Length: 216
Image 1 (cartoon, helix red, strand yellow):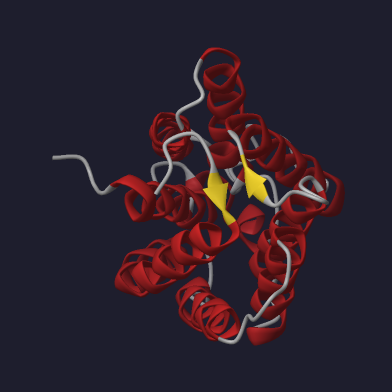
Image 2: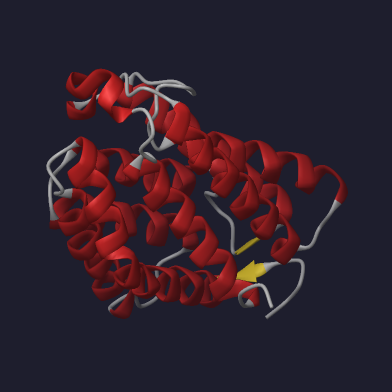
């Protein structure tokens, strides 16, 4: 795998492996969601990432932009929910950001993160600090953009994004939920890590792991 670019086939490989690895995190996400919601996010993660795996297994000669948008559609259709709609929007907007691209560079990865953030913010009407998946995704996008300015290595950029997402995820522990069903729990949500941010941070980490392997 090239250090500075991702080919179409490599994009498929990374996405497919990351989606497969998400199955190992279903219980973690479900348990967090049960504390401040209904626990259904575990089902969403299981079904939707499974659907992405199945979709990618059937991809033939589609370009990268269509692969990402197709993965997003498969995600949202597998188990309709707020999270699946938002995550799907992120994938589809990321796909729009790399139209006509036969391979991806550091700048492309940064553009995909940025497009995903903007698409999710527009759809969900949330912002950083509301205790949502954006609290992991926004730091990841910022880290990717910063890294891409001085580094062409995709492995280092994805790892920087993953590390930032994990930090953002942990910060949600001290927040009170301001969006969705969890908002009704008020102060009870403080002290619980946001399940949506957790799912996003794990996915970014597993994408980095699929590309370069886990930290030793």
